Amino acid sequence: MENFERPKLTKAEIDETFRDLQKMTAFRLDQKGHGILISRHEMKGTVADEVEEFNEAVREKYPLTIEMQKLKGCASSVEDELIDIAVACIVSLASVKTGKVQW
Image (cartoon, rainbow, N blue to C red):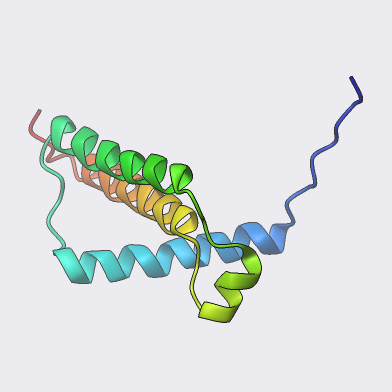
């Protein structure tokens, strides 16, 4: 088996991703409210729902190619769901940091 070297992420790509997550987190909070996730079980359910939606997007029979995404002016559903998972994790972590998660 040949040695496979993965392409490297650049600092610019990571920075852009964090900016996108910051924007999407603010958007979702404005959309759904700024209340904390009150329990570990609520956090688990929120993240698990997003992971399941990601799994469904991965299984799509005909996911959009990069070229089609550009033509349609949209991101792939896989990318959307990864963002939603990250946002759910950010909101969960921020909720824990309040010290007000009940159980």
